[in-house]
Length: 262
Image (tube, rainbow, N blue to C red; front, side, top):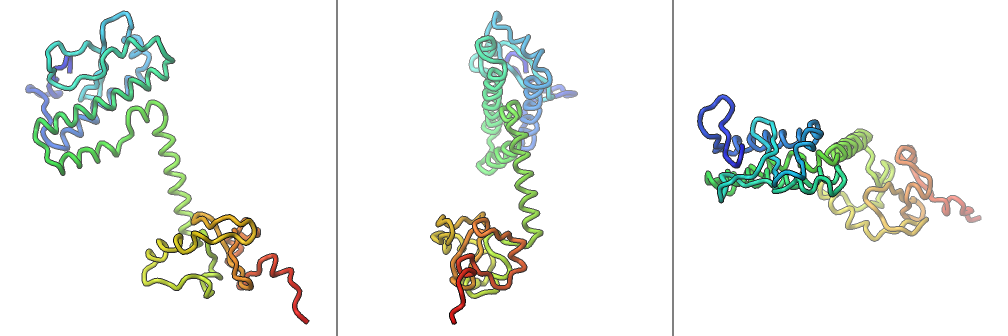
Protein backbone atom coordinates (compact mmCIF):
# COMPACT_ATOMS: atom_id res chain seq x y z
CA UNK A 1 0.00 0.00 0.00
CA UNK A 2 1.38 3.40 -0.95
CA UNK A 3 -0.31 6.65 -0.02
CA UNK A 4 -3.22 4.73 1.49
CA UNK A 5 -4.16 2.72 -1.59
CA UNK A 6 -4.51 -1.06 -1.46
CA UNK A 7 -1.74 -2.72 -3.41
CA UNK A 8 -2.64 -5.61 -5.71
CA UNK A 9 -1.54 -9.07 -4.62
CA UNK A 10 1.72 -10.31 -6.02
CA UNK A 11 1.05 -11.90 -9.37
CA UNK A 12 -2.52 -10.56 -9.41
CA UNK A 13 -4.10 -7.81 -11.46
CA UNK A 14 -6.96 -6.61 -9.28
CA UNK A 15 -7.11 -4.82 -5.92
CA UNK A 16 -6.19 -6.84 -2.86
CA UNK A 17 -9.39 -7.38 -0.88
CA UNK A 18 -9.18 -10.29 1.59
CA UNK A 19 -12.75 -11.49 2.13
CA UNK A 20 -12.47 -14.53 4.42
CA UNK A 21 -11.10 -14.92 7.94
CA UNK A 22 -8.17 -16.93 6.60
CA UNK A 23 -7.38 -14.32 3.94
CA UNK A 24 -7.53 -11.46 6.46
CA UNK A 25 -5.29 -13.38 8.84
CA UNK A 26 -2.81 -14.02 6.03
CA UNK A 27 -2.87 -10.29 5.29
CA UNK A 28 -2.27 -9.58 9.00
CA UNK A 29 0.70 -11.95 9.16
CA UNK A 30 2.27 -10.47 6.03
CA UNK A 31 2.01 -6.88 7.26
CA UNK A 32 3.18 -7.92 10.74
CA UNK A 33 6.25 -9.69 9.34
CA UNK A 34 7.18 -6.61 7.31
CA UNK A 35 6.91 -4.27 10.29
CA UNK A 36 8.87 -6.62 12.55
CA UNK A 37 11.58 -6.70 9.88
CA UNK A 38 11.72 -2.90 9.85
CA UNK A 39 12.05 -2.71 13.63
CA UNK A 40 14.59 -5.53 14.01
CA UNK A 41 16.65 -6.77 11.04
CA UNK A 42 16.33 -3.56 8.97
CA UNK A 43 16.39 -1.15 11.92
CA UNK A 44 19.34 0.90 10.62
CA UNK A 45 17.67 1.50 7.27
CA UNK A 46 14.35 2.25 9.01
CA UNK A 47 16.09 4.71 11.35
CA UNK A 48 17.66 6.58 8.45
CA UNK A 49 14.37 6.86 6.55
CA UNK A 50 12.62 8.39 9.57
CA UNK A 51 14.39 11.75 9.25
CA UNK A 52 12.79 14.32 11.59
CA UNK A 53 13.52 16.99 8.98
CA UNK A 54 10.98 15.41 6.62
CA UNK A 55 7.21 15.75 6.71
CA UNK A 56 4.85 13.50 8.71
CA UNK A 57 5.88 9.92 7.99
CA UNK A 58 4.19 6.57 8.67
CA UNK A 59 5.45 2.99 8.82
CA UNK A 60 3.44 0.70 6.56
CA UNK A 61 3.55 -3.08 6.62
CA UNK A 62 2.71 -4.68 3.28
CA UNK A 63 0.93 -8.01 2.67
CA UNK A 64 4.04 -9.40 0.93
CA UNK A 65 6.05 -9.17 4.20
CA UNK A 66 7.88 -5.98 3.21
CA UNK A 67 7.69 -2.48 4.72
CA UNK A 68 7.96 1.14 3.72
CA UNK A 69 8.12 4.57 5.31
CA UNK A 70 5.83 6.93 3.45
CA UNK A 71 3.57 9.96 3.67
CA UNK A 72 -0.03 9.36 4.77
CA UNK A 73 -2.88 9.16 2.28
CA UNK A 74 -4.02 12.43 0.75
CA UNK A 75 -7.68 11.51 0.43
CA UNK A 76 -10.04 11.79 3.42
CA UNK A 77 -11.15 9.31 4.54
CA UNK A 78 -8.37 6.98 3.33
CA UNK A 79 -9.03 3.59 1.73
CA UNK A 80 -7.57 1.83 4.78
CA UNK A 81 -6.97 2.94 8.38
CA UNK A 82 -3.73 4.89 8.58
CA UNK A 83 -0.73 4.07 10.82
CA UNK A 84 0.49 6.49 13.51
CA UNK A 85 1.39 9.81 11.93
CA UNK A 86 4.74 11.54 12.40
CA UNK A 87 6.80 8.72 13.89
CA UNK A 88 9.92 10.46 12.55
CA UNK A 89 9.45 13.52 14.77
CA UNK A 90 10.00 11.52 17.96
CA UNK A 91 13.11 9.74 16.68
CA UNK A 92 15.75 12.10 18.09
CA UNK A 93 13.82 13.06 21.21
CA UNK A 94 14.14 9.72 23.01
CA UNK A 95 16.42 6.70 23.28
CA UNK A 96 16.39 4.50 20.19
CA UNK A 97 15.01 1.42 22.01
CA UNK A 98 12.19 3.51 23.50
CA UNK A 99 11.40 5.02 20.12
CA UNK A 100 11.29 1.59 18.48
CA UNK A 101 9.02 0.33 21.27
CA UNK A 102 6.70 3.29 20.72
CA UNK A 103 6.51 2.61 16.98
CA UNK A 104 5.91 -1.08 17.74
CA UNK A 105 2.91 -0.30 19.98
CA UNK A 106 1.34 1.91 17.32
CA UNK A 107 2.07 -0.74 14.69
CA UNK A 108 0.17 -3.36 16.73
CA UNK A 109 -2.80 -1.02 16.98
CA UNK A 110 -2.72 -0.36 13.23
CA UNK A 111 -2.60 -4.06 12.34
CA UNK A 112 -5.71 -4.75 14.43
CA UNK A 113 -7.46 -1.75 12.88
CA UNK A 114 -6.72 -2.96 9.34
CA UNK A 115 -7.82 -6.54 10.04
CA UNK A 116 -11.11 -5.56 11.62
CA UNK A 117 -11.67 -2.94 8.93
CA UNK A 118 -11.71 -5.82 6.45
CA UNK A 119 -13.95 -7.77 8.82
CA UNK A 120 -16.44 -4.91 8.98
CA UNK A 121 -16.22 -4.17 5.26
CA UNK A 122 -17.03 -7.72 4.27
CA UNK A 123 -19.60 -8.37 6.97
CA UNK A 124 -17.89 -10.83 9.31
CA UNK A 125 -20.37 -12.11 11.87
CA UNK A 126 -19.71 -12.49 15.59
CA UNK A 127 -18.16 -15.95 15.32
CA UNK A 128 -15.93 -14.93 12.43
CA UNK A 129 -14.70 -11.85 14.29
CA UNK A 130 -14.01 -13.99 17.36
CA UNK A 131 -12.14 -16.58 15.29
CA UNK A 132 -10.07 -13.87 13.64
CA UNK A 133 -9.10 -12.36 16.99
CA UNK A 134 -8.17 -15.75 18.45
CA UNK A 135 -5.90 -16.45 15.46
CA UNK A 136 -4.28 -13.03 15.81
CA UNK A 137 -3.94 -13.37 19.57
CA UNK A 138 -1.95 -16.60 19.22
CA UNK A 139 0.94 -14.56 17.78
CA UNK A 140 3.21 -12.35 19.91
CA UNK A 141 2.63 -8.64 19.38
CA UNK A 142 5.21 -6.58 17.53
CA UNK A 143 5.91 -4.81 20.82
CA UNK A 144 6.64 -8.15 22.53
CA UNK A 145 8.99 -9.15 19.70
CA UNK A 146 10.84 -5.81 19.62
CA UNK A 147 11.29 -5.56 23.40
CA UNK A 148 12.25 -9.22 23.81
CA UNK A 149 9.19 -10.00 25.94
CA UNK A 150 8.09 -12.72 23.51
CA UNK A 151 11.32 -14.70 24.04
CA UNK A 152 11.04 -14.31 27.81
CA UNK A 153 7.43 -15.54 27.82
CA UNK A 154 8.33 -18.47 25.59
CA UNK A 155 11.22 -19.42 27.90
CA UNK A 156 9.03 -19.18 31.00
CA UNK A 157 6.31 -21.26 29.36
CA UNK A 158 8.87 -23.90 28.41
CA UNK A 159 10.21 -23.99 31.98
CA UNK A 160 6.73 -24.36 33.46
CA UNK A 161 5.90 -27.13 30.98
CA UNK A 162 9.11 -29.02 31.76
CA UNK A 163 8.60 -28.70 35.50
CA UNK A 164 5.01 -29.86 35.21
CA UNK A 165 6.07 -32.82 33.10
CA UNK A 166 8.76 -33.88 35.57
CA UNK A 167 6.32 -33.63 38.48
CA UNK A 168 3.80 -35.78 36.69
CA UNK A 169 6.42 -38.44 35.98
CA UNK A 170 7.44 -38.60 39.65
CA UNK A 171 3.90 -39.37 40.74
CA UNK A 172 4.33 -37.20 43.85
CA UNK A 173 1.74 -34.63 44.81
CA UNK A 174 3.18 -31.38 46.17
CA UNK A 175 1.51 -31.74 49.56
CA UNK A 176 1.25 -35.42 50.46
CA UNK A 177 3.48 -38.48 50.29
CA UNK A 178 2.32 -41.98 49.49
CA UNK A 179 2.39 -42.96 53.17
CA UNK A 180 0.00 -40.15 54.06
CA UNK A 181 -2.36 -41.04 51.23
CA UNK A 182 -2.82 -44.48 52.79
CA UNK A 183 -3.60 -43.01 56.22
CA UNK A 184 -7.02 -41.87 57.43
CA UNK A 185 -5.91 -38.31 58.13
CA UNK A 186 -6.72 -37.06 54.65
CA UNK A 187 -10.23 -36.00 53.55
CA UNK A 188 -12.42 -38.91 52.37
CA UNK A 189 -11.76 -39.82 48.71
CA UNK A 190 -14.14 -38.41 46.13
CA UNK A 191 -15.63 -40.23 43.18
CA UNK A 192 -13.47 -38.22 40.81
CA UNK A 193 -9.86 -37.14 41.21
CA UNK A 194 -10.60 -33.72 39.72
CA UNK A 195 -13.16 -33.02 42.43
CA UNK A 196 -10.62 -33.92 45.12
CA UNK A 197 -7.98 -31.63 43.63
CA UNK A 198 -10.40 -28.71 43.44
CA UNK A 199 -11.58 -29.09 47.03
CA UNK A 200 -8.25 -29.85 48.69
CA UNK A 201 -7.14 -26.22 48.73
CA UNK A 202 -10.42 -25.11 50.32
CA UNK A 203 -10.32 -27.80 53.01
CA UNK A 204 -6.69 -27.13 53.93
CA UNK A 205 -6.57 -23.40 53.35
CA UNK A 206 -6.64 -22.69 57.11
CA UNK A 207 -4.15 -25.43 58.04
CA UNK A 208 -1.09 -24.06 59.83
CA UNK A 209 2.37 -25.55 59.86
CA UNK A 210 3.19 -27.04 63.27
CA UNK A 211 6.72 -25.66 63.00
CA UNK A 212 6.55 -22.16 61.49
CA UNK A 213 2.85 -21.39 61.90
CA UNK A 214 2.39 -20.33 58.26
CA UNK A 215 -0.69 -21.23 56.22
CA UNK A 216 -0.97 -24.15 53.81
CA UNK A 217 -0.06 -23.42 50.19
CA UNK A 218 -1.02 -25.78 47.37
CA UNK A 219 2.37 -25.49 45.66
CA UNK A 220 4.33 -26.61 48.73
CA UNK A 221 5.04 -30.12 50.03
CA UNK A 222 3.43 -30.93 53.39
CA UNK A 223 3.63 -33.95 55.66
CA UNK A 224 1.42 -35.07 58.54
CA UNK A 225 2.66 -36.51 61.82
CA UNK A 226 1.14 -39.93 62.53
CA UNK A 227 1.30 -39.25 66.28
CA UNK A 228 -0.04 -35.72 66.89
CA UNK A 229 -1.70 -35.41 63.47
CA UNK A 230 -0.25 -31.94 62.90
CA UNK A 231 0.80 -30.82 59.44
CA UNK A 232 4.28 -29.49 58.65
CA UNK A 233 6.02 -27.89 55.68
CA UNK A 234 8.44 -30.49 54.37
CA UNK A 235 11.19 -27.85 54.40
CA UNK A 236 10.50 -27.02 58.07
CA UNK A 237 11.06 -30.61 59.20
CA UNK A 238 13.67 -31.38 56.52
CA UNK A 239 11.58 -34.02 54.75
CA UNK A 240 11.59 -34.16 50.94
CA UNK A 241 8.86 -35.78 48.80
CA UNK A 242 11.35 -38.47 47.77
CA UNK A 243 12.22 -39.27 51.37
CA UNK A 244 8.55 -39.28 52.40
CA UNK A 245 7.92 -42.09 49.93
CA UNK A 246 9.96 -44.42 52.18
CA UNK A 247 8.43 -43.38 55.51
CA UNK A 248 5.61 -45.67 56.69
CA UNK A 249 4.81 -43.76 59.89
CA UNK A 250 6.11 -40.23 60.23
CA UNK A 251 6.85 -38.69 63.65
CA UNK A 252 7.46 -34.95 63.86
CA UNK A 253 10.50 -33.71 65.85
CA UNK A 254 8.37 -33.01 68.94
CA UNK A 255 6.83 -36.48 69.01
CA UNK A 256 10.20 -38.10 68.29
CA UNK A 257 11.71 -36.39 71.35
CA UNK A 258 8.95 -37.48 73.72
CA UNK A 259 10.00 -40.20 76.12
CA UNK A 260 7.77 -43.28 76.32
CA UNK A 261 5.70 -43.52 79.50
CA UNK A 262 6.95 -46.06 82.07
